Amino acid sequence: MAKPAWIPLSVPDLRGREAEYLAQCVADNWVSSAGPFVTELEVRMASLAGRDHAVATVNGTTALHLALIAAGVGRGDRVIVPDWTFGASTNAIYHAGGEPYFVDVTLESWTLDPELVADVVADRDNRVRAVIAVHALGHPADMEAIRTVAGDLPVIEDAAGAIGATYKGRRAGGLGDFGVFSFNGNKTVTAGGGGMVLTDDETSAKRIRHLSTQARPGSTYVHDAIGFNYRMTNLNAAVGLAQLERLDDMVAARRRIAARYDDAITGRDDVAAMPRTAWAESSCWLYSLKTASATDAGSLIDEFAKARIEARTFWESLAGQAPYRSAPSRLTGISESLSGTVVSLPCSSHLTGAEQDRVVAALAAWRGAALEKAA
Ligand SMILES: Cc1ncc(COP(=O)(O)O)c(C=O)c1O
Image (cartoon, rainbow, N blue to C red; front, top):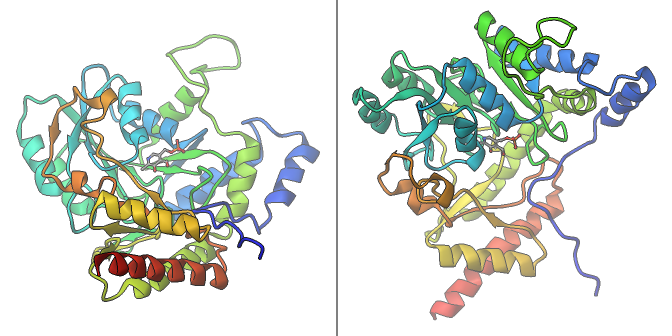
């Protein structure tokens, strides 16, 4: 019998006008970052998040880097960042010359714990100059609470995976002093690669744009700052724009898949669904569930591999990892408990009903195997 097709975790859904817009780039000879799709994507993203300004970059990491610089982070400064996030949130702090201050997440939302942030901020001698709040797996952090305890510190929203999510009815990306998105290939909306910084502050937006193109005030080779080559290309923006046109459908599809998997694990005590809170409507970027132990996570992944379905553990606590070990932290053990135990399941927006059936069946088979072992 032929093997069933492999089901990947989260792959691009390119059923819109991507090819048409890419062909237009070639026909118009606009492939570099000076092309019109870049501006169009910026305008659409600003409007989506309800912001005055948007600057497109080559990826989400560079968008974070520029947002940190605009927030005033420089050499020796510290930035509060959740301990449970992708390394990129932290690496960008080092790129800006700073150092992370790792703070734990809550069990309720798997996002930054505002009470712990308040503790760290209260210590005035800790050189903390900004806060990065990460919307984990598409679920917004408690932004109001974080902004309140952050006081006058700038707050950057790492909404890399949260396009389409809302917080108390407001769109992710419009909730911090700066909002940052990623258009990486595994995101709900991809541009192949790309990022975006959003802000209402005109001076910051101008500075970010200027720094992203080597800081040349004019068309001559005179520079007024140490800049970067961080601007998105027209080719990437063409794909991003076509994707953005289908944002609502793609987010709705991911939410339906999440609801289906939530149903499939109802009543089970060996796994817990990813968080839902009253303050947020998650974009359900990457459906993930929490298993009881790293051993369980491993056996689930193995069971899925047998059924030719990709499943993968998610983020690991950063504070103890080799590159970040010297940075300060305020941890309670929650990030540690999520490390190696949270497993992501296939949730591409064009995942078919039959593919979802296979995922649900694999979840049931894994439970069956565990019960058999225990008997
Ligand atoms: C939370 C978070 N921050 C930042 C990034 C970095 O984005 P990029 O891969 O576009 O550089 C990612 C990417 O997956 C992410 O998940």
